[in-house]
Image: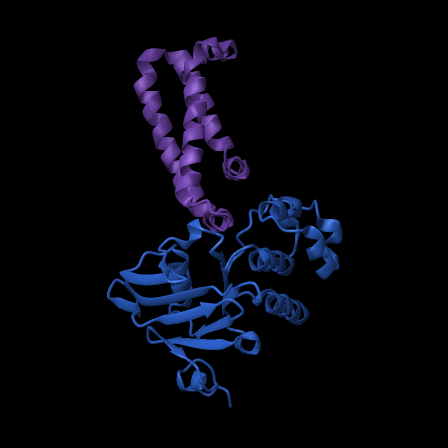
Length: 109
Length: 219
């Protein structure tokens, strides 16, 4: 239980940026439809890699906090990636139900 | 029970530059080992190698004779205080002490200043106050060995004396490996001193050797 709390705590430190990307991805899928899925998927993967490489360097020092509690970098990043990707899948799969994205339709090209 | 940490056969190169080549270190419960060396001689690299954070060409790190290449995966064996602040600033002291399973009352009795800071965030403390918390949690945690990289930097003389005092108290439970350029403090509390020079560790038998090895001018 303590380990889960620590893993969540690490993810909490930077969850907003990848979550906003996932919400944007969901909105794009709502507007452009399933034919844009491949592009949106790679958009998410690319931004994930950029965000995570930035965070990895920015939070490098904090990793010692978790290492001293027995949680290595690999576990931290695996958990963060998995949780982020889980939210992405949930948002993407439910995108057609988010009627509040409908105001974007008038901007569709 | 007396635990033993031994390090040898360490070989580290960065490109063509040989950093470590002939290292032997031994640390035991109830011992404080001081590691001195000039900047760039590989003290922090050696500590990271022992901790398992830095890959090198070869190494042997043994806890009670048992090899362990990734000591950071076992905090019950070894904990490491890096030379910079490592605790996430958003965490409260309450959370930090809970995570490391330490009693805050013992801490506030020793350092009354922190009494009203129990629920404060770590980032609200000054640099020296943060460092005290970090040294305390690493030194007091349930582990066999502790590595302290520059624990005295950024501390006032009174704080340094307090830190030395609780390290000396805690050494009955564990072994310490300490490096700091405030070498007089290291010399004061250490049972053995190693000087790292030209990639090799030298166990000091006479204090004058640290001058011969080019670390400090004692005259």
